[in-house]
Image (cartoon, rainbow, N blue to C red; front, side):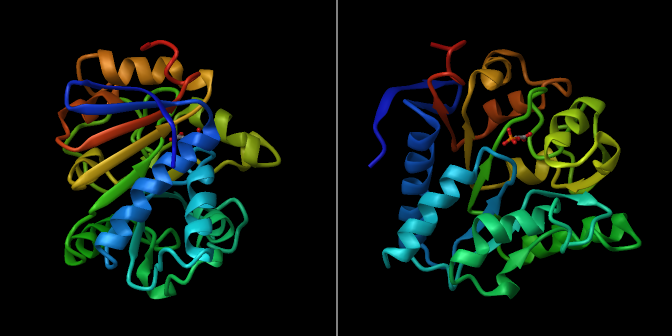
Length: 254
Ligand code: PGA
């Protein structure tokens, strides 16, 4: 069980501070595993990047230990580069297979990403919204936060009622994500992302963050007035949102 060092509420957000990124993974996975036990056909919203990796490792352990099964779980990833081939090792589909899906028993047809090979990103985005709705909506969404408080690829300025759509990545995001690519030129310029409205429609949200580099974004998400320039601050309006932070990410709010 994850050890929580500080626990408090700001706005509607339940904040839990743990010791390390490993503890962050343990705590978030514990919550998600319990939800899967309670609702085996849960619909999850999942993110990529470095933040959720420790959560996925723990979920894989729950699965290998026979505690949970993903055979009825459905997943919708928050975003994907556009255009990108799913076999490209930088695609989010590839990293999700590497970090989670290939280690668990989720049926391939239960895994969803925006269609980033579609000739029409508009149609691909609309289809994604329809699929989410048909699945009954997202029960639990696991997200991270960017340095500019973007959630998924909702770069500032981002409207709180935005839906899944094609967006142009900011120079800052491309620079930060270039660590996964050979050169910055190879970082795609576009992505299809769930909108803030799509994300805020999730019945429950867990936002994880670790490391001092995220402390300012966490501060802004919790203390700035929600506005398009601070997309993360719109989480203050959600009724069932939890932040799980390591001490470094929480350093400006403690
Ligand atoms: P990270 O990215 O998990 O790689 O830090 C989070 C984000 O940019 O949303």
